[in-house]
Length: 456
Image (cartoon, rainbow, N blue to C red; front, top):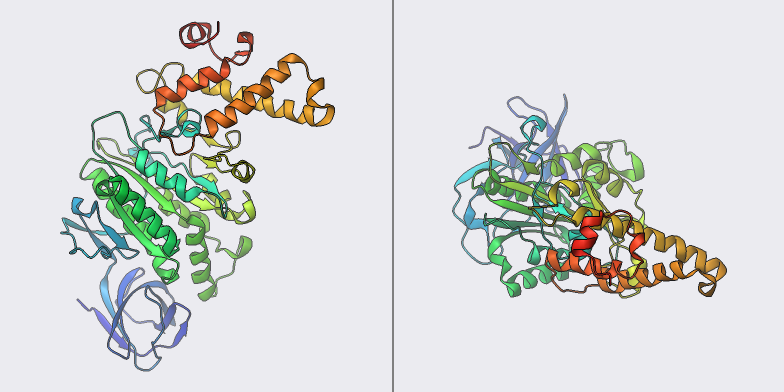
């Protein structure tokens, strides 16, 4: 229903159009833009001041004219129809089907902006999610309701790792589990890769894919994650499902935000990004978690590429402030042919301690992980010493640590595409620690050493 109609534009700048401000319109209101050739495009109000109203056009402004373009203000915000039928389907960045199947039936129409979960209503995350990847499951465990990003770089295998997590992620309970995959600014090859992977493994029936391609307008990129998260909220908090949301690539999302901010003439902040980048990220990341009284949950794994591998770049820097840890991919390990090239010493899961242990993974998990960290940190110190005095001059204990370090990288970190159960991962960790003298295991209580240790 059209509430206000206006013919003619004052200005067109990139993906934005500007019209004179009028009564009875509001911020974030949905807009229909009729081009001179009669085709219709969708937009929304970005900004309203005394003189001009700024509108972002999702499909771009190519072909629009100042005198012959009509703008219909629809008097409502952007909403998407959601239902369980959207699982197993592939959509574009605006939530429209692109898999040549009919539009799914909508059980509800929901505002895509949703709302961050009130901290008072949050239930603390405590349930372990197995990814099948040892360096994550053992040392940086993922917990239901957590936000655990992957910090990567150009050319690193984050797409393969993402696909592996989607295919392998599972929980011990019998509750329903599904995945929302949100691609932002990805190229056609990556989109095809993910699509084929999910179809070939059969996991596609539990996945809803939202794909904004690099060739699509940047305006659409800002809407895509919010559409995907709206479906996630419906499935989690109405249908009582446990949802894993994959967001890739948050850096490309931030670049689109920079383009729009520049078009609006806003004063840039760090590296040209808008000053509200933090709050914008938070409006996405905080739409995860668990709600008291609800059975479902939303867990997020955002993927971002760090420009020039700079972890202090605004995108990873601000993401780290909002989320509960990070998994960092290491270029040096990747060059050595190690997959997944996860830098365990730099990675962190702040909620891990509450999602592991007796009744969840295994009673020795926490102390075993702590011992692996301590031992590998010692390895790095010994390697630094060996680079100065030579490996032959090291004492026997230090040589044992070097042996442990090589085995840790080649057998534990470098697991390829193998899907390891958590029990298998923990047993492998004990195998590796048996390389060291038993008295070096200072972070594991004696009863666990006697029960699980592999010392002769």
